[in-house]
Image (cartoon, rainbow, N blue to C red; front, side, top):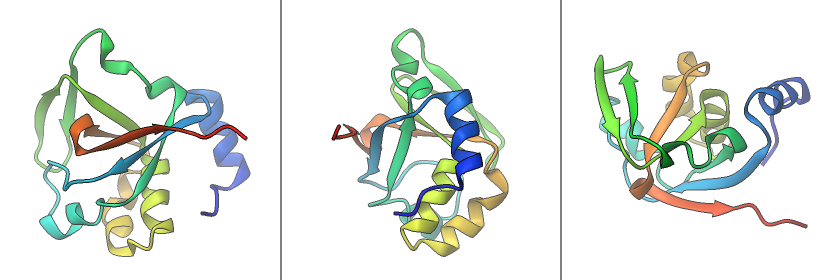
Length: 124
């Protein structure tokens, strides 16, 4: 998979830390997107940055779903930067989903932990 442009990768790393794990989506995530868009997440490997690991250990997360205009609570979540999420969709060949979410690249995407598998990165 081709990486993000270096200047964007550097900026994301400065703010959120390096990518330390992958969250591989294994089931259709809940949310307000059309079903055909949500289905495209399945099989995509999303980069999880250091700042987002273990975020929900202290308290449930409250998230605002931009599509449904609802606040949801999730006591076991995995957060992904929007830029990383949209880039991962595009790199996985999920072009229509990447286009759908393109305007949300500055948001944080929050998945339920049971919607995928969290895997630490293999060190070389």
